[in-house]
Picture 1: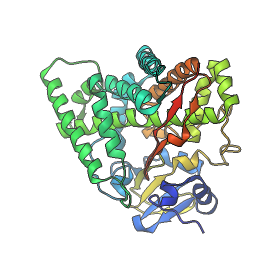
Picture 2 (picture 1 turned 90 degrees about the vertical axis):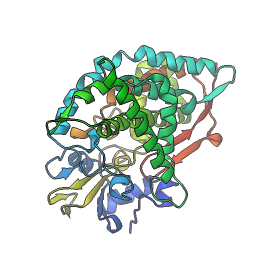
Picture 3 (picture 1 turned 135 degrees about the horizontal axis):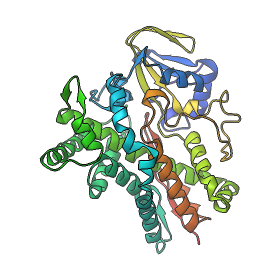
Picture 4 (picture 1 turned 90 degrees about the horizontal axis):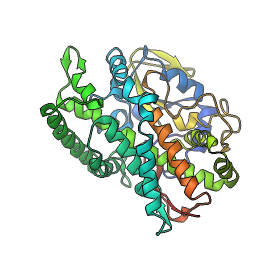
Length: 393
């Protein structure tokens, strides 16, 4: 009989995939009585429910800190909004996150990645997270959002502190919530500076001009939106990149395919996103009775979308636990689906392609120092905190 708890050591410290398979096979809609929450584990169920704005709401929160442990209040963020306000804000964000606009960032991304790799030559290696991709991701997030790129290291530190967990403590810690408070205070300062200065063509300006219920957003709401953009833009990509670096190292034949034909690099990145998705789940709340995955759910109950499980569902992916850069599936859950799909899909794909191109061009036979790697262990997001590699000629 399957027993699933997102905070259990089996899930957080171990490999959650075996228990996810049990859920898919035995209880595709699993009820967690402690939290009055349902967990969906099959790909198709998650895909369909992700598009259901009629019966499900994001306005009550979308994370474990909002709906399970309830240690974090629900603040205005685009991922915590429903239509029509959500639809209008997504439309306002369309240009800065569109592929043509994002493509303009490629020279900057390539420069940062190249500088970081070149600086590591004398040392013979680097940590691909803290010494490379964290700098890429936060610089891109700051640039799009309208924040000073030089503040990136400070923001990175706050983000990592927010996600760090303590032994024996379920969910976000007091130190993590303090880091979020520091981030909000920083955003308040930058918002005041922008109000006193000239308008610019960036996301912060879009937020300053956006109206909800006939009124402009106050500073707390603006800070909340900025927090989502910085966290989402800076935290996930380094983890996905580190995992792909590891998987290509473990499959040298597929790595060599990418070296010989760099056009395969986007396929490798996409397979890495499917295979090792960091975000274990996001959530919704039921706003009217609905039946999903054969279970009848009532108003006020919560739903977890177990993305990492869905991405390993054999009903969608043949031999799902095999890493294969030539898989090329028509759909994956790594960027979500439906109205709340990830805003940063184009930036993530660009960052992944460029960073892999630069790494494989300089060090096609790099070695991963797996014994020195460190993982970030949380119920919500998993992945590497540190992944050192040795560079090769």
